[in-house]
Image (cartoon, rainbow, N blue to C red; front, side, top):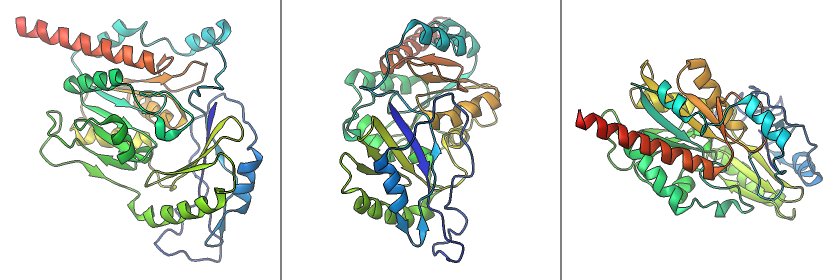
Length: 342
């Protein structure tokens, strides 16, 4: 099971930091939505890293626990009781497809998709999290009919290299790096390219932390540091599969990115918009929560195990996500043909 910890650098009280970051880097001030997963003690290799790391007089301190997406080797098999619990929490998006379409009638559907664990399977090497050709074809067709965005914790450029579809919106670094379609999009209001980077002032600090992490983790077997431009991920292989994430403590997350993209599309204040967000981990809960609070659209959790979530429906794995998207494309194609005949 892949587990995510999110940490940040805290300053000593007597130190004045340059780059105007006095109050922005510290323990994350906002607690993520609760999930019922058990808290597991941090492996020794990570404890030592958190203890030893020292940047500009600030030390690494306790981390905030997060939930996990599915992992290839350590995911427990889904037994009958797990399946029953999951269904009791959220119905299957495949089983409820007709009801979902009925709820979206007369509204503009907008698609938001996480990448790892949603469009591609979770793999041991994060650099090899490739999406299948069939998934790419499906997402390309999806974008023909609906505005579509990829929202990921990864670097935006890296996600683009995986997806390779210029007609999509991309929000990398948990929504802190947003860019609109490289090609002209029929869904975009106006001709200006969307580009938004709310954490740009933190880039020098993130680069500094990255260099320090490379030095501190080089002796830890199985540790790999991933630079996501506005945040960092440290992948550990010493106990199961674990990811330690470091990001600025600004009030920005995937939920904020969703709202920004809706605004960029000119749909933020519309009553006839129907956003659909599909994701598999704790960071996606911010987007699920936003949709619940707006009372528009819905979230779909990708998970094989029962989890408390703000999502309305679930799909078990990326293959089911692809089937759901294909079904959505087919429905839209058929409905448009009927409209042309009338």
